[in-house]
View (cartoon, rainbow, N blue to C red):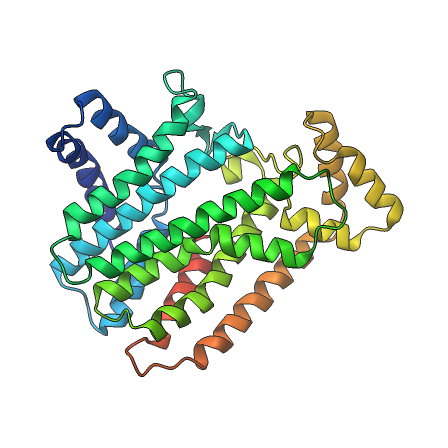
Length: 344
């Protein structure tokens, strides 16, 4: 039976990588205050509670290798996992700014810290740029560097496009014509990377970045990332601060949220009008009315069915993959298992 990965060692690696980052930036001529601020932003926005993305990458890599990983491989995959967290931190800062969020993981959003404010806009850009500087520093000498770079660049483009699509849908007046297809496309573009990127990095690291492997991995794991977004949308309305670590804003911000779209699919015309009167108004009273109404609908049962159906479909797709270029079913199954274990 494969050994589980040591979370304390992952945490120690992340802390060491973060502490070493200012020196890398300063050696490039970046002033010390800027380099130190970047380190603080990296640490503040990293998810070091469950290390879900790190475990995804490590388990996927071990299954690809078909053996226990060497000490160097574990160290390298720790570094790649940390870079994914830096990348995620950039996305989190931008997302919280766009959504006017107040809390993230049980504490104030980065832009609400007294010394941050509007500087957060540039901080998000700095962290995104830092990913590529650090990637080159850590992996630029390895044959896999090109594939690693391409994975970050491609997923970065889709994330930004997803954010823009999200903003476009939200800027429309509350639309009773929002569709399941729009919501699904938004989830894949905006959040597909959450599970796909760690897997692609492992593929390239182990020299298995053949086009067919990248395509199959993306086609299977992007929908799992969408399911992660569905869970996020569900928690925004049905979750509680002490459980999900944030205050939901999807109703106030007029988001094309899975939970809201599902409510529209269930509602009769009179109920649709009630939603229209309270969604996207920006005030807490209207949002509370809409939230209470949506919570009265059988959305929880529909979410559970959505998750069950999606996971079943993806497991079926895993069984049909072409493994001639080294992609393993067990590796893909490990990501599905990690999602069910670590992301819920």
